[in-house]
Image (cartoon, rainbow, N blue to C red; front, side):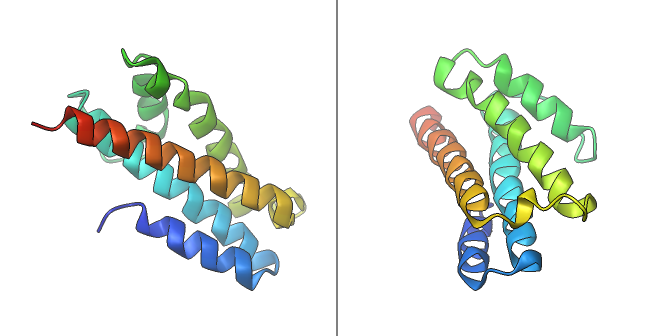
Length: 126
């Protein structure tokens, strides 16, 4: 499965609405972009991936240091998505992950990350 499949789930959940659906849409949007970026770091940038919790920090670091400016600029967006994912999953009193407009914005950010990395992956393949 390609991580971009999580975007389809996130889009569906945005349409379902409701607090749990919107919070889960944030989670799936983040993981679609994170896993796409992790695969890129490992396969295209040839970086060591631990396949554990430290990968979240490492992947942002690897993206930020990527030689391609379009890729390196994605590190901040990935970090923003990660922050909202944490809030959505752990901070039930914070209602920002239940705001449809914000969740759709985060979905589009994740979709952009996946698209740019996927385009660069295709260009980098033999």
